Image 1: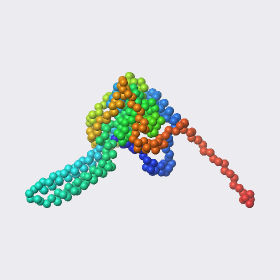
Image 2: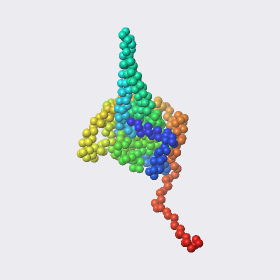
Image 3: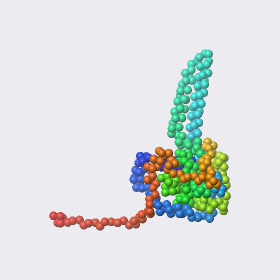
Image 4: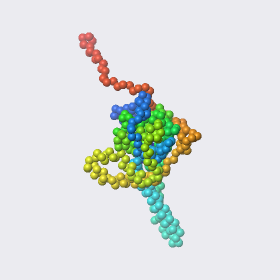
Length: 387
């Protein structure tokens, strides 16, 4: 499911009028958006160059691993897809049934009109008008409002991908155009949720490894981020994943354990096993009552798994541009980094208008004052003095 990536891209293009409610909520809660400082960004980038684990390991799914490239599944909720697919296919099936009944009534009308007895044909006209109106109106509403959500799981790329190229020292993100599209980013300048405790997210429980590029690095006036691999059960798993990627890019594949290569073909187990990613932590520490409850809701996992498989079947294998596929090979050009000029003019306009939301402030963050300062109260004048 690409909901997070889609929402992030929509937020980067959101006009000022649409954010008025967000500003009102911030004022009501007394919170304010904190922009990062250059010193903090530099510190996080420096942490990403340090060894954080002695047991580097990729839990995958890994699609490519060779001397040049490492390709891993991306996306924060991609493994949890399924529910939108079930709802979408139910709506599409209902529209097709109504359209089929309308066509069937139309065929009966033709048969009756060709009959020599010329019977009354109004009994067929009414179903044609009623069913045709329902099918057309529902199709319009679905295409106008519902298709954008269906494309988060079906009729799109089967997976979000992230490819690390050791020879070019670049990182490539493969996303649909409505999620930001395919971009080329530099390896130098990346920060990671597995690099230090300061950048860790939720102790690594239930979330994948997160990589981040600040606007100082991207050159597109906005940050870029990618969720890599499976959801973690603890921070140690994410550190091992990050260390595997870091050593591959900085030192090469030598000495790294070879990961299991996953096929892009939508096998059924690729849809059911992801439902339990990041849940081992809860299974181990859960009480007996909780474990019984989890067993009782197993049919729900089965239904979502079926929807997940349906989603994979209705999507197509993601394909990189030729320039990226050949990157790092002898004699082949190095892909240029993605810049603001690569976006359509209307997208450039929105990104420029929202650039202030992601600006990295120069210098260091000012230190907070520990104690409050009070002005000395002036004595009140006496009445005799006033007179």
